[in-house]
Image 1 (cartoon, helix red, strand yellow):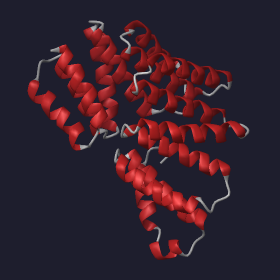
Image 2 (cartoon, one colour):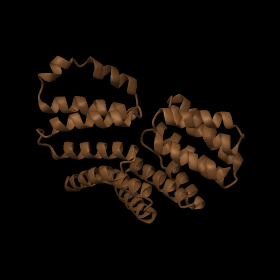
Image 3 (cartoon, one colour):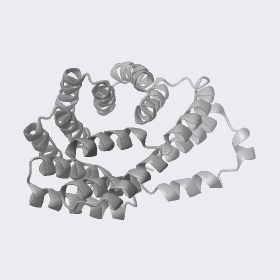
Image 4 (cartoon, helix red, strand yellow):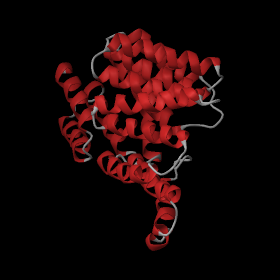
Length: 275
């Protein structure tokens, strides 16, 4: 899962015999359901992910490991965020944050958990608080020389700026995210950042530069077989590059069929305002 070979991880999970699994201890059973939840999350099936996480939680109660509980709360916070259950998400994120802060050498998880809290605040339209929390996460990541959390922080801060109509600041944030040299290439983050960069450039009437960022993001989305981002890219292409209502409706339907309601709603509003 960590190297994004999700089909390989699913094949491995299927090799685990259910009867044998039931004979194992709570920790092994917890991992089995927890990793199944993570797989469903990576496949954008967030409700299914939460169902697996709740089964995992019944096993976790018998696991005396604070960091395991912190990681569990962190993953559940992300899943709830994805289905716009913001208050549930913040609750689990705060539990995770408390545990990560009490552990040594967990700066990376503290930074990313702060970002989850900030993202929920952004969705609740608490944009000033969200901006401040993202900056706290970026500063922590920078002070600890954590490249990926720092890049993620700038990416999310850019989204926060775009929501506020601060397009120049958003552009700078996305450029900062792309400029950070990661120890290992992260295609998904690169794809998402270039998609957001294209959105901002199109809004700034820099169509040629926006199209370049769009095409680079689309190439990565096709390589990763990420149908949701292919749809998002088709939507902004239909708006800013080629007036194509058929492509626009088809792309919005992809998001709806995948139950990505938050994305479908946000982009529908964006399209309505544009036209």
